[in-house]
Image 1 (cartoon, rainbow over the protein chains, first blue to last red):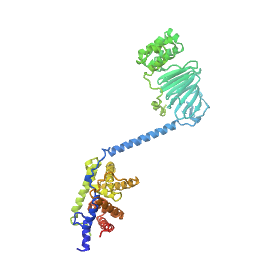
Image 2: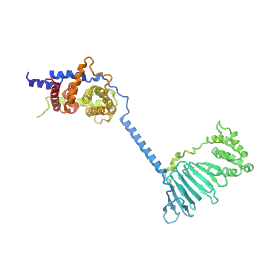
Image 3: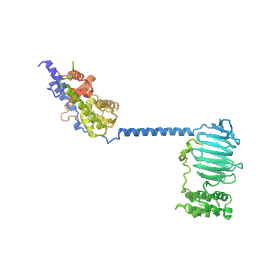
Image 4: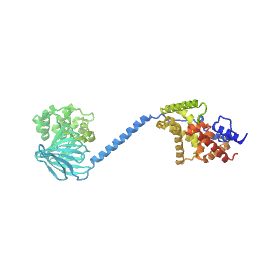
Length: 345
Length: 186
């Protein structure tokens, strides 16, 4: 056999292992044989079932969307509450039926806004809300920072829409403070300095040197400089109930004698237990017993509360009972998220 | 001049059937069929092992080959063209070899089932021969390992590596000639 024949045989065998073997190639094959991979002797252990690719992509897309929404919300949140200290608030004066166009301007810190009887105004409360100022009102922005915004309302009426943490925004009135707890409300100050509050959503606190009162959505209250803030009364309560409650607040003993207290208790509904319990807290001992008894009929206290103890002035038991009422928590301001949306008048 | 051998039409038809069969298996595996993936493992394990053997120490190549298939199982749904499975898994194997060196993993497995314990000198000789192949020009390495270690035919090598049969013939011829010289054989 010639060298060429050898080479042809070698090439044939290199190309096709089933061909006539070449001794040279076989020698190398034998030498390399220990390296051969034997799949049969090395079974593959696969991980558990995986989600379909489409499912994974859907999950990824959902996660990405959530991250996007969360980062957008965080950015909006931060932007909404950030406000340079002392920066003016955007202001639009509306001249009522006047043919002149509304003038856009700014409401500066410590600069009084005094509206004539024909003019109203729309004020942006930094970025946390808006305030419609009724004709004839007078107010001044006394403080504005990222955390606190304060307005002095000397007279007139405002409709406020704020979505912010409790006490970020508040009014000072001649009768005391009106503190936003994250909500929509109307506030007016009479010529004699009496503040009148009506709450649409959330809660508002009225406070002065005599005490404080928490007013929930759907309720109203009043405040004068000469007495503690009035208890909240729901707007849908019977007129004799609403009027009688104010009489009791002024003089509970007299109201007990002239029949006003009885009329109030007769007109009370389960929803009015809020008013009755708050009234209990501010009434003298002589008037508490019938109020507590009626409240217990309309909204029985929990087993851990003793009505007699409440009538005896036990504040801790009173508030335990109060917390069983069907009302949203006063500090859950973020639940009123709709108040963050633009207001359509 | 036609390069097609007599009866080439039949061979081409058979090749089409094989490719079609492989595509079906890959698609089934993509849908989570473990048995189908087992067929792919049986068919391509030697190919992947040869690619790794051309790059990493012989004692770790089998484990890495299995790693490549586990990775392929988890990523198989990302393979858009089932007919390109061979090239795809070859790319995974080459990347796995690079990762092995990047991670600085040079430890020896506790149990080397690949070694021939009855004749350790044979394993040493085999390692030496693989080391020599690794020193050959790149074009010859995988081709020679597929043929001389894994026992693939030239036609299989051409199909697996995406080379023309002529290129494989040349690589086998020249590569083997060089190998024989370096092994010191006549």
